[in-house]
Length: 134
Image (cartoon, rainbow, N blue to C red; front, side):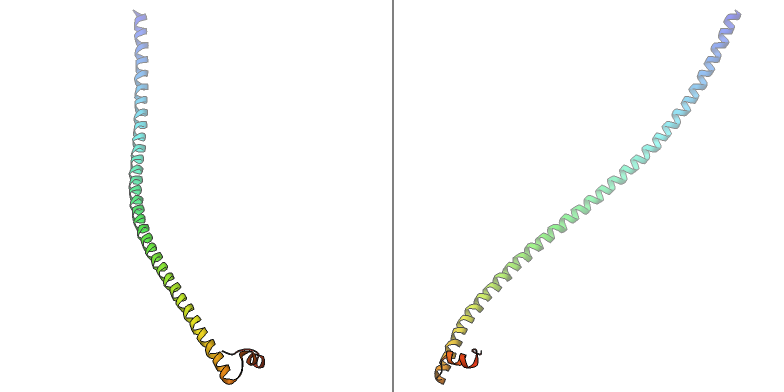
């Protein structure tokens, strides 16, 4: 019987050690669980912040796309106006060139007529003065 009593005491001691170990493990796991919950809260908060930032960036990107569209439209309008202005300038240049040619030939005819009236040729006037004055 003493042997069984010793065995019982020994088993009770092992049981007590197991309970203490279990309590220690429970506290350790509770601490780890609390820490992981804190980390989870931080991650969730960061995720929410990042989602909000992504949403904000998408809104800004959409606004920028709209602004780019407006600027492209304005650019096309300005390019069309520029092409119109260039065409008008080219037309005026052609008109001016045609007008200058007609005016130049009239002036040349007038000059030659003046020389003939004075009894000289343009060559004789050129030789005397060095060049024809305009």
